[in-house]
Amino acid sequence: MGTIISSHSPILAGPIVRQANKTQVCIWLITSQAYRFSLRLFDEQAKLSWFDSELAPEQVSQIQVGTHAFINLIDVKPEGSIPCGSRVSYDLTAIDGEGQLLPISEVCEQLLYPNQTFPSFVMSSKINRMLHGSCRKPHHDSEDGLLVVDQQISEGIIGEAQSPDLLIMSGDQVYADDVAGPMLVAIEQTIQQLGLFHENLNGAEISNSSELFQHTHGYYQRPELLPDTKATENTYTHFFAAKKKPIFTSVNANNHLISFAEVIAMYILVWSPEMWSKVAISDQSIPNEYKDLFKREQDIIEVFSKGLFQVRRALAHVPVYMIFDDHDVTDDWNLTRGWEEAVYQDEFAKRIVGNALLGYWLCQGWGNTPQKLLPLFDTCAQHFTEKGITEHDQLIDKVLDWEHWSFHLDTSPKIVVLDTRTQRWRSESSLTKPSGLMDWEALCELQQELIGQKSVIMVSAAPVFGVKLIETIQRIFTFFGKALTVDAENWMAHKGTASVMLNIFRNRKTPPNFVILSGDVHYSFVYDVSLRFRQNSPHITQVTSSGIKNEFPDKLLRWFDRLNRILYSKYSPLNWFTKRRNMRVQHRRPQGQKVRTLLNSSGIGLLEIDENCESVQATQLCASGKQIQFRKNNP
Image (cartoon, rainbow, N blue to C red; front, side):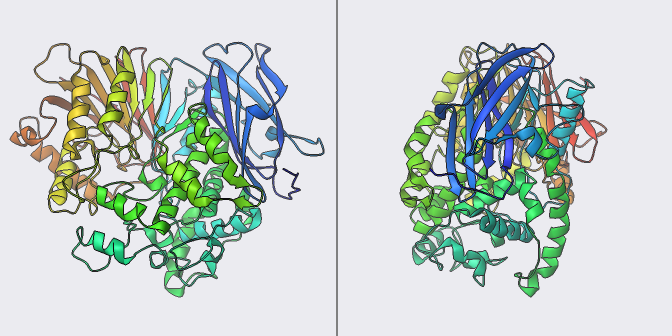
């Protein structure tokens, strides 16, 4: 591949520290050229060096996604094991075709904390302090929870607090289906400036993605462009008493992303400040009836973009792991068998879903466990060329067929991250019933992961133990064939999945101590769960932290919280009609609350545990600056 001279910043997004352990360090970034790299891993204080070399081709995997856009995953094995607890500094340098050296600590503005010479992270295989969260919507009107991550790392570097061991984001890191108008304007200009590759589109009103933004319905009217064919109308008459229903069910799909170029531009814009200085946000292309909404969104997006220097700095200083949920692709992704049949039998709908999943692989999933995803890279890399993507449909098929998105980390305690989207237990009796979040085979594999462990941290995008009132409402809507209406996605919605998951907790060979981390719901809560009628019950603590930058309608959540306490109190007979009636669920209350159990505040979750997860402390670090600990009720 020839060298491409670019006037753009060398680093468009990143660096983000990904998989990091004593024998492996991975760093992700997007560059404007096909650079070579050199890397040095070292301990500044102890004067130790674990790696110092220009990287060989096998140590850098590179995918070209535009004329001036290259996604890179650096994967190196240190020379000797990195001791647990070491602060690992890294000096990553890009090398252009003329041999010019471009150290990232110099070319990335504000990448370093005060008094730092190089970026660094703590390598810890023993987890006792970690951050977690989900649901980061740029145009939600709240502060960004990732700014709290930056603050936590800053305090760790100067010694005011212990540095976090890692950050896990458990879904909806981007909202591909819910995009603000100003963000879409920035996406359009980013595509143009970087030459992100366009694609031909079959079965759509437009023949090529380059026509999207010139189309009458390009802004705020994309439901008119999204697929809605006669075949899918016939399928959806089983769901809705309506003559016409779009395939994509998001209520906020007015600017739904469609092309692969749009998806890549979105990732660049939500994780990096680089392109925001080069775009000019204007409502010139916005229809008059949407200009007021555009202005309101623009005010929020401007605040969001100003915080991205701190977001980029934070993600460069802590190992980061990610798993998808629906909005990373589209709302209700694989919710029911009927939804899947409607989408995957429509060529255009399948392309939209595939493009978003392709973006997830390259910008999120790839860095979790590069070796596990190596077969996917080997079979897909050939489709990316310097002129664009070849055989796009075949590439989409390969990504959609991949079934190994789940992963685990060999930490202490072991961390197991679940794929609750692509291995679903589909209903055989009805198109409209929600699919189980994991099928029988995937659950059996999960049980094998758990056997023999003293304690486990399990990451599930959706809470395993949800709010009973909300689950009951979802069950009622499902009974009447309206699962899509209320987003009926919970572990108890499918009899088979619920039964197997609960039996895993009952199995005497599985760990005596579980911590479940979840998100998805846009509010935060903590449950302590044990088995009724059994001595030596496993102790399960579920910590739900949501969202990073999203919240539930506050008045509605207050009503749900109040009614749930009344209808499902400790001695309520309604508890015996739930699938988890043989489990004792105790709520922890947010600090300062005498009655309420649900916390509605954007931010990030802080989990502090001992070696065997016998002591579990959960705190919501609110983006507003408050720190609210969830406390057990007095006996």
